[in-house]
Length: 268
Image 1 (cartoon, rainbow, N blue to C red):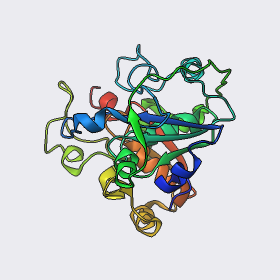
Image 2 (cartoon, rainbow, N blue to C red):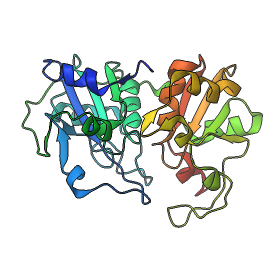
Image 3 (cartoon, rainbow, N blue to C red):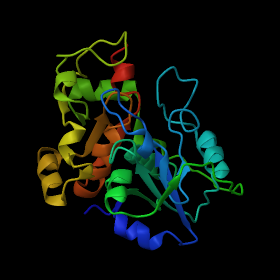
Image 4 (tube, rainbow, N blue to C red):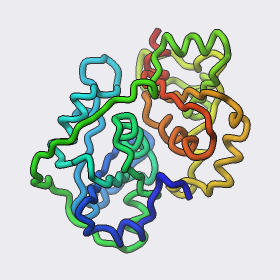
C-alpha cells in the first residue's frame, strides 16, 4: 500500500486523535452519480474542502485553478487547520478528487496529509460511524503556507517539453478523449492531446474505488521509471493528481503538474 494512503481501519482507530483533521471533497463527473442518502453523510467530524471556489483561483478563467499561497492559507485557517494537523482527505466517489487536495497541501509545504483509500464508499462498506453533513464550528487557526512553485509547470514550459520530447508528458484522461474520438465535456474546446504526450488513464490505477496494489502500479509506471522529469496533465488538473500521488512513491523522477491541462492547451 502507498504511504500516502490510509485505510478505513486506521482512520477509525485514530478518529479521536487531537491533531487529526478530516476533510472531504467531491467533484462529480457528469457520467457519475451518488445517492442522495450517501451525499448527505460524512465521517464524524469531517469538514468540506471546497476545491471549486475556496481553494481555486476564481480569476484565472479556467476551472479548478491552483489557488495563491495567501488564498490557500486563509481557507485553511477558516477550517481550523494548523501546521501541526494530521490531515486525512476523502472523496465520496472513492478515489477521484482527493489526490488533488493531497497535492495542494504538499505543494503548500504541509506534508502531514494522507488520502483515505476507497473514500466514503469504503468507509460505509466497513460499517464505521457516519453523521449527517453539517458545518462545523471551529476556531480560526494561524496556519501558514509556503508554495513550492517548482512542482507546477505552465504552458510555456510544457511547450518546451513538446519541442524536445523531454520531459515526458502523461495525460490522465480516457483513451477516447486523448485520441480525439469524442467531444470534450466542456463546450468550445477541441479534442485531442498535447503533441508528444502519452496516455495513462487514471482509471487503470484503480480497482473498486481504491488504488491497485503497489506491484501493479509499478508495472504501469515501468515505461517511465528512468525519466528525470514527468509532467502530469488531464482535463483541468484534478485526475492528473491520481497519477502523481502513485508516481511519487514508485519512481524517483521529478514530478510536475501542468495545472492548466487540456482545458488551457485545448483552447489555444
